[in-house]
Image (cartoon, rainbow, N blue to C red):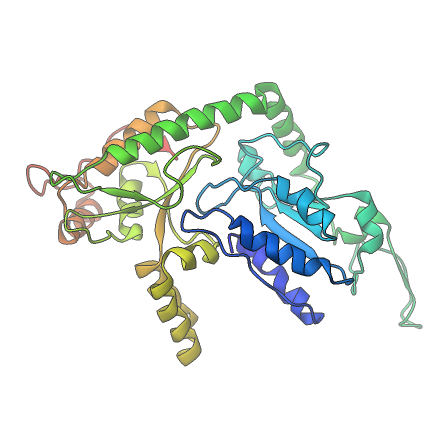
Length: 367
């Protein structure tokens, strides 16, 4: 279930060709259910038709790192493997001579910030012969006839899949970005992120209301073991009511802290964490077909706050974020709503009591 919508969308191509689509559920800590996945892969082993197993090396929702051993285990049972590495490779080294998926997806701007809109699908060369493209477009064709509509010859290998003119103005930035990352070293980046993640998780767990209740609940593992620099949380008032993630994000913006709210284009983890809320969301779609209403409901009751650490994140950023979150100490929802109104009404914030105040720090942070 733990897939970005860019992977979820592949199911529509599969269904159009009559294929069955199944999801392997995650555990309550948002890790792969090993026994369930093993069973599903074994069942597929009996089929002689082509099979594709797609999973993320790192969850874009929770930061959980799923075991790369599943690549070989699936291939041994006759599955082709698509590894979504978009959230993984910005802060973790991936050795494709050790782990050998058939396909790997990645996004360059997630690694070094620029350029947007350019990603890569890496394929084992042997896989080109298995690919059947039912259409063609400019740049992918070697010959085509309009007098005989059955005649066309696709380009070979990767050129058959690159429609139109590539973004040649943005490509030099990729070469520079990769050289920059190589100079720093992915092992250093990974070590930096692991240390910051441990500090962040420890700090989040220490945040308490005066009653002793937690201000923050971490969604997913409560340790840095087998997880990347993405930590997703819910923020609670002193009355144990969740403060709407969108409100937390907007107040963070005023404090010059960049975090994100929502389900992060990964509905599977959200459905696992908020099953009852998703029943209502699906009912709205079934009964009314109103996607906007369903989305609004989802943002209210099935969303979270995501903190993402990257190469530019510093220890000071972690300190500023924890100070910001600690300002929710002893607050209830109405207090926070007043904070938001004050912050966006006059840009200065407002004091709401001795232990429930909101004062944006002057230091800019990017998380």
